[in-house]
Image (tube, rainbow, N blue to C red):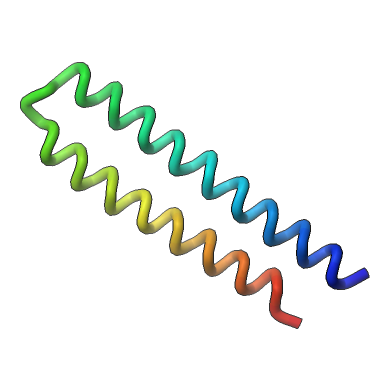
Length: 67
C-alpha cells in the first residue's frame, strides 16, 4: 500500500510541475507579444522560474519515494 501512495504523490508532483511550467511559458509568451523589446528580461525570468518549479517538483518526487 505504501508504494502505491508514494507513486500517487510522485505523479502529483510531476503533474503540478508540468502545469506550472506550462503556465510560466504561456504567460511569458503573452508578455513578449505585448512588449517585444523586453524579450531578454522576460526569457531570463522565465528560465529562472521554470528551474525553481522543476527543483521543487524533483524535491517532491524524492520525498514521495523515500520510505
